[in-house]
Image (cartoon, rainbow over all chains, first blue to last red; front, top):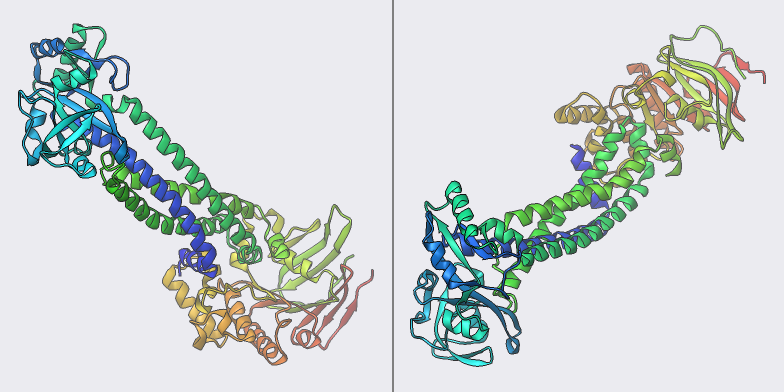
Length: 375
Length: 242
């Protein structure tokens, strides 16, 4: 028999209490896994938008957030192309629209030049690509098309105007699968941004070379003091939307953790105080204080382990459900980031240790004779 | 109060020197200046009415509590100067409680292993030792039984086996037959006799029963926190002056 056996069998003495506590912990872990998982996936998918296109730098107006309200000129794109050490440069305009009748409130609209590699690299599922000369035409991402119930040849209303759906595409990115693509000129007209794009993604030459990237960055920023050229990961990490998502997910997770910690504290306190006499007998038999503490913490960690398994499964199911729910399917990828699992399990372990600490320490200080007498 | 003992006892194991124990800032006095010795391999019964201080004395002998005054020495070494009383209890003392204190979810074999966690044995060693001890107390056929599936007498035997887990020098038993019927009680006392005779275990037993005390070599009578009588079985009686 190991000490862990005693802990496990102690939990089996009060199965309902143990199950309820594990369920509380599972709910907290599920909240952490799903929220952190969504935030993590949100960020990594956004980063993939740039990195999978081989971009090294994102060029936008200074200001931190995605500059939807301010643009940069098309002329700047040409200037960047002419810089030494500059590879391919892709400029695009971005906006957000809503399809309220379908409960879709954050749909990305991208405007691309007809020869933009983005348009060439998506896989057409239905219809065709956008071509030069198309007017008031759009391509819909696979998920958005399904959510709107549209296919090639149908009409969709964007900015209060009818646009013909010329094709439905599939992209590697969950955002693009939930997005509208139109030609840059059309979107510039709708947004009243003639001659402007939201920003550029730029590849250094040679791609990924840190020195080339640094040099190119300095050269781009020298073109215009209001322009910031930022490495992709740094850019994505600095986006206010990402920060808010991260903070919100952690705030909600923290509340869930707190509730989980109180649950386990209550369980362990009740369990330990109800077994004072028994623990007094352990001490009388020579068990050192740390071993009693270890027993209590082990019980708590076992509950956390059970809660973690159920919680991770629950969190994953929540992410999958969000990925399939039409309101969020264009934003949530449906995968389970390892970091979210690690953070959920680590928090459960922390909750278990914190929750068990008080009753464990309380008993560590109790003389055996007092424990036996009070029991 | 001190009391001189009958002479000719065995080698001294426990030496209780003018021990007092008070509670509630001295307003309640459970023991008043008690002195006596217990020799190695001795079988001593402690008797007295309820509230006389018997259990307090047993707690002090087992290093579960500290005297307010005086000192208790084990093999000449004062307990109050020992750095690790947990280790002392684990290696030297075996407790047998009136209410057994067996873990209900653990089998007899597992319950007996509990004190061995503080000993040198590994997992297999602990299992082997627990089997031997349960065999010794006549429960080799009940190894896998949880306490609920054992009779009350069998539970006390498991508790005795557990008390012997670390080969203690002294077995302290607090009314070990108090919860048993006469037949089971007699069985436990026979076991004590066996342990005392065959294994040379030093036994200190608190009891209300004269038949229990009759098995011991010596009886210490306590009344109002003081030693009232010291009696050698079938021999000299010393009435202590108050």
